[in-house]
Image (cartoon, rainbow, N blue to C red; front, side, top):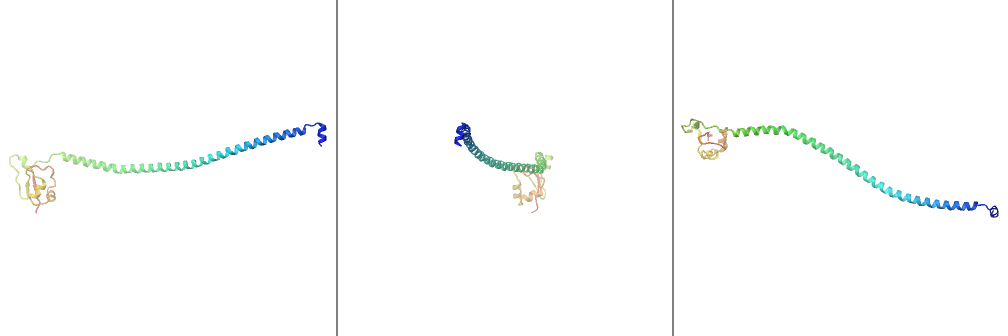
Length: 173
């Protein structure tokens, strides 16, 4: 065959060698490109795995945030209910405090003897006339009774403002 091909002076074997060399070059280039693609793919796979891990953490954080929002809403609701329950009670207490303040501002009633002006008060049986410098404790001690008993038989007396000439009832011993 060698002889035939040389005689015909055919370019077929040279073309085959050229095509072979081109095929080898293209195959090498393809192998290099595939290698680069594999390395890029491996690097991208690592990034994808990190992103998946981040996605899981983000999902967990979102769930925890949702739970926290629900807890805050529950606390807000229960706090509002507590304020709604306590508000009327505070209003009632404020009215009571205002009444007590008004009662404290009113002057103590003047003793009957002081109104007459001319005669000093005289103690009857079971009574005591307050003198200057007297206090509830002094009166109770001087008469041999307890302060609680003295206060019990004189319910309308303001013990912080007893005045000379004021008549007090004495408890029975």
